[in-house]
Image (cartoon, rainbow, N blue to C red):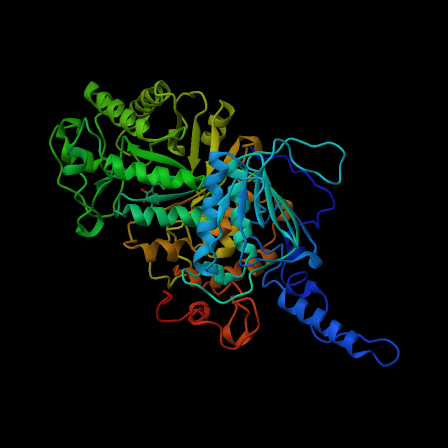
Length: 597
Ligand code: TNX
């Protein structure tokens, strides 16, 4: 459900007003020269003014307080209150294990580039320059009474003495840390030490999500990706305040999650992938590593076991599940809709209960995704009957069922969520399921499908749902997207990445960035704070960040990426020769290929 928009004191009316175009680096007052009025100034006075001007220059932030993606709910710049991280900076945090963990993440983020020790303490006697505070109620200086925090809400206050992040939960603090990260110069993303003045723009941000469910999906079945690759994708989600990673764990081309009671699913069904590569799978320990890594970044894993279709790999391993009880050949192509488990055989339901039971036991989050898409050969009552039984199995495990929107005609079960991936916002069957109680995750194929090409010449991806450039990813409204579906039924937004054509981490990143931040803003930011003009300006500043972090991205021509000839202050100061680690090169779209070095 979208959070009710609230105002918090004299907000500037949206992030664009604090952005670099209007209130960013130039808000620190005149940066060159100083005004002398009347008579001959004394030498000391002159020197004092010069020192003041120099100080203002040195404490000029490289980003504006409003340059955050996704756009915060309210931004109040205080240009006279910029903060410079001192060499003896410490992180002080409330004495709470989850908050402490967020503080450790912050220190981990900042140590490589700053080269500072950044000790973390929860002792109130030790002064902290970076303070992470859990508080029962939201501080509201301009109003008499404190109020409840909204879910995931945080507040960042920056003044000359330090940065204070306050929230009601560790998740809120974590989001505040991601905001602080974006307020520091791009060089903060460097994995090696950079000589830099770490200036943070002064002022206050109060921020909260519009939709509670904000996610991305990675298909690890068509091509397999390692635990490290998945963790890196989780990092990208966390950066943009996405809080769910949906893993598409099973499909015709491979079964990727070990199930003790049906071991051949992986030892036989996991050894294939699109194109004939070796495939692979996650052991229980691997999967636990993923969910643990995600949890520490406040991301919930949503595991999908796709049923009753998309099951060729399972049938190869266990022919008893096949309608004719004959093992099909392994499949490494990219067609869909031909395979299915036998909905008339009780053994199939034993299989489903065992698999979902084991996956649920490994998964701390509330969701189990049962697929349900493109089961073209299981029709009518056979299909709805199958889905209804599987929904009951999920309910019996105490979990909330999620399925692709094809499951809409099945009976309602408490809490059930449909993931809509259509391309036409008029879907009466889905609207009807919503009237019976279903909630929706929106993944419109023509806005949110990250496996769609950016442009006709994009070397990867599909185009069946159209081309999706950054503007298309950004320009839609989840609250009104589906006819006959009220905004209250929309839980949020998810950006799926199918991997038929994707074989490496660099290719994943190339399709994720820069569209993932666009979809993150659609999900996080209230419509009143969103504008394409502001977004493309704010997003431009992320190119140097990704480059400093060694992240591949598509240099979409719609985004005004900084250019070296602009004398961009990537390292936080004007210079014609920034340190090599932060030099912004190769960012212009090139005709031949699109990967950045
Ligand atoms: C449709 S979207 C599928 C996937 C494919 C994808 C390719 C959905 C629920 N099913 O099986 O990978 O198109 O874009």
